[in-house]
Amino acid sequence: MWHVNPENNHTSVCVAKSIESCPLYQRNKETKHFTTHDEAKAYVNEQEKQRNGILANSESNENYDNIKYLFSKHHKTVDGLDEYERRELVQSTKDESLLRDIFNKKILDTDDSRFVDLAIQNPHLPQRIKEHMISNPDAYVNDRIYALINSEHITNVELTDISQNTSNEDIEQYVEDRALFIDLNEDSFFPEELKRDMIENPDGHTEYRLYSLINSDKLSISDYMAMAYNTENKELQKYIEDYKIFEDFDDY
Image (cartoon, rainbow, N blue to C red):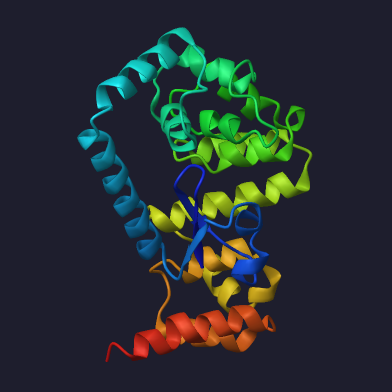
């Protein structure tokens, strides 16, 4: 199962046993869930098209551009911007000084630090900040490091550095799972021995890792059937049967 974070419109694997138990959904009921990554990405693309169309056709587009200019160049107040406009600005700005001020909570300071996470995931985040987070992950709360790990501009080399520099076992495990997810989605070499072990011993792996493999194109119907047979996790078994085995059979 995949979900779309309504705060930044990013897709990621949801390992919750139900939509109601998903942490993102509990925090924001607008969180959408999908069976496959393709469905989640299609939703994101459609949302972006609609939003861009609204902005492009809006009679107040000139005013929006002026606000964006003031915000990105002079760090003026953002009281006149709605939630979507604020997120859009943080995600799209190339102004490193602006991103630095958001990271340091000099502006857009909120209790849940959502704008800090968006700034971390912006590819124009100042390199010194990124390097410090990679070199000293234990100096930050887990959520900030998770934001960096989940950013689209993180590399496997940088993930390895984070893993080597942390003493936090949760972060180490998350890095391993994220690196695996990147490999699965970029058609990188995936060890056959690891794949066989995940099929034959699924309960020895994290759900994040399992769902990443399940939703990739690396498994055959016989692989899905073997994994469903070998797991004692009823939710995982049902997911495989409902969305992979029987769905694939319907294609014949």
